Image (tube, rainbow, N blue to C red; front, top):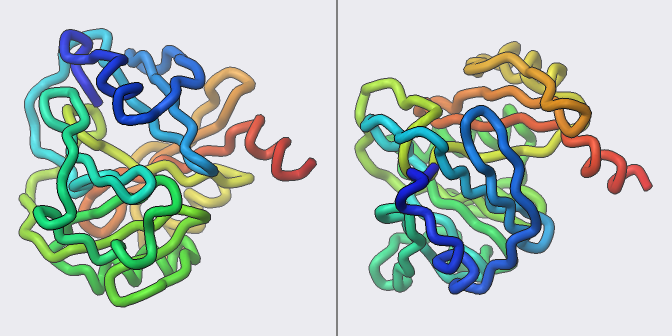
Length: 212
């Protein structure tokens, strides 16, 4: 999430992204960039964001080039400066790295609860994307959904309500129960063991395209 005063579209098109469309949702202008089978959402806050703890989402990578988010802009991080356990298996589209005090617990959650394929001892695969985990201390404070930086992942599903209930039944926590965004999508949020937010989205256009 980015403060409106810091957002510059050219920062994002300058790293090779092409804007697909913009929607207004929950006080944000969400700029959506398609990357192969994934979507990078850049949420620009209409009102200023409050200070608060960062999430464990450390960086994102586009076709193997890694970026952090600094002052609202994507900043290239050379491989030598970024611990990247997913380096050998990612690079196909959009990849994410999560800092966690327990990569083993994180791997277990994402593979057992969501059924993601574990590709090595620090990486899971979701479609053409990978999620890598590295050991790092995290604050004990609760992570707010709304705040600066990379705030959440999104998993596209067929039934947001059913998936949220299943996550809860498997020991996960529901952060926000699903709601409707018009006839576009139904979405809610769950939390991983470190308190990172995961959007569970049943987007009508994605479901229709998959079924056709």
